[in-house]
Length: 411
Ligand SMILES: [Zn+2]
Image (cartoon, rainbow, N blue to C red; front, side, top):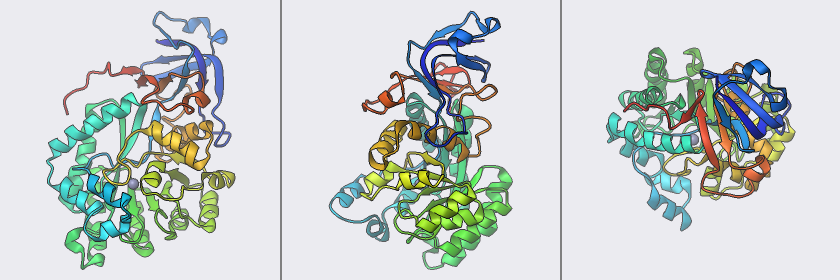
């Protein structure tokens, strides 16, 4: 039964108490057995029966729950570096998309990759994320846009989930944009999604959620409603890319449908905020995408004041957020959205777990939860998110085992 002592500050990040309450405990200790937490508290109060042989030294550092990146597009082909330059020269995201770039281009590049190639590439990203303290990651499909290609992407996530220790949570995003084969037949693509893809993905158990990109150039409100309702009928709770580039009524739709989260929200209306507060939908902020697209940030303070839980994630993808550095996204949430370091930490732990329906399992340090935790080279969360360094993580522990001491079987 391992025991971590000499913890300078342990932030338990339980769900209760609001966005800024991270339940920080000085001079703490943590005990786990197998992959489960057994005890935590002040080291001086450690029960004698738990003082065991295998002692780990926290060296006075900060210990937090394993970080959760609750919005990524992990598996894809290529990068869109020239579009980055085009945007810097003044072209907009929508102009690039209309000219055949953006998501449609990544779809072409992803379709041409084999399953094994996608697994190999994504596993390198995952190794990087694990070293950055991430222990659970949501991963979306959406660069296939036909049955075989969407199943291929979801199988990539299934293989990766089995082959390495991080927990992956797959989301079906066949409604990312209309597939190129259906450019002249939007209704045909929506019915393909609802009648074939969603039922087949659900039947195979390859996804836990159904997501839609509700935006000009992607799907409109009525299309999004019918796709998400079909997902719900097949046991896939709703997520939504909402109000990113314009107010498309996404926050209100997420509330109406009882979505588990609505993500982006830079342009959400006041009514949308109120509706999400009443419905208990998690707002997922994606500040890397905001920064890369040169947008006005999602007004996190107003969401928090209304009592909406705000999670923070990377939106890792090859175009608008080409970085899987969750610690950087956390710092940006402080600097661009005026969230305090404690609020951001709650947003990548307890509230990110809630955005994935995993709050009973991960996202906080409590007896009975998975022993996923990270030792940070800082005395507390304010110091952590003051200086930006490439990586402040000293140790990532997943299911009670230090990464990368795992035997990682080849995918
Ligand atoms: Zn996204």
